[in-house]
Image (cartoon, rainbow, N blue to C red; front, top):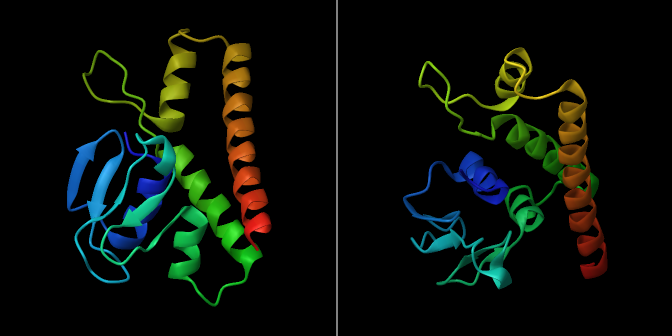
Length: 150
């Protein structure tokens, strides 16, 4: 399963040229084209961050969006970030066993769980509320962090 950062970078740069695991993946750097531009979410100091070891291009998702859309106002980048997060939330694959042997994900997974009575409606609502809360907290952290940095 990819991370949100990996999903955003992939939307802009295409699939990674190398996937190491634990969310760590490599792309050609958009600044210098060096092959060691990558995400490293398994390392606490680089969680939700990317870095090019050649030119030093680094940051978080908002930094990446700023580099990709340098003339776009900050509030538009936040809107873009929110939209990318929504898309990521819908694409997240949660593999489960089902009789057909195929992976089920996103809204389809939730519908199937309800139909099969493997989850109660109240539990589902609680789960969705928790996901929404986590997403809002993440967006707020990005926003506050960006305001502090200037």
